Length: 309
Ligand code: GLN
Image (cartoon, rainbow, N blue to C red; front, side, top):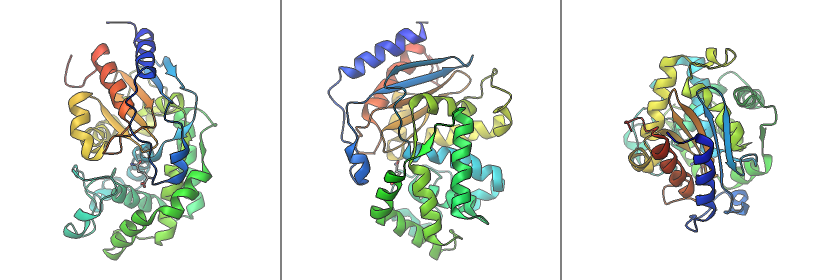
């Protein structure tokens, strides 16, 4: 097996030299301003050691990667009752699609498409003020990353709030079926702000340790997630984490993963590694183009695919 830091250096160098970067997201105006030349990778291995390459300490908008963590919080709060209002099947549709909601009576297919994540946020919000819920989510991320520097980029949140007509449509539509309980503007406000959390690859890879469930996991984070829940969230990441690109990601990379339109991906090799990559250019499904390529090479070279070497 090659040495991990050597592979990380090699991949960072290869990505620097790759011209095919995809398009940065423009529907959230603030994200359109990000330089597409960034590339970053960070890995925490089973012993808790961290390996980095490229711009691993530059914070970026984690966007939909936050949905993995809000799912943890919602399951922690209401347990399996969450599945009465969100499904667990891949959608095969775009992340912001509304088409399935009518036929399926307002129940989103899974917690990672926008509709599903909005329903999850609504479940966390129940009985609280938006500000309290947002503080809870942010503190959770800081705790998991072991870094108080994780912050919410209010400019990104405001930018999305001004232009989030589709998400408003999804939320209102679900509310009409009784799937959303809180005032739509409260739920959306919390949703936009947790999507606007900014983290570096180093911080994100640290936060992903809880899903990798290492034997060496620090006693501080072990109680956050049982092995069974980690396994199940990983299953959802594999089947739904890249929207209509999930099959392709499983085929090429063979790790569980969650992407965000900021260009980040959190990928997990259970028991082996927590990996964060970032490159802002996206493919047609809204997944980082170079991020996927980097993970494909990493998983192949380290023989980390969950389907075998
Ligand atoms: N905040 C973004 C949205 O709601 C998240 C989408 C994503 O990262 N795929 O559109």
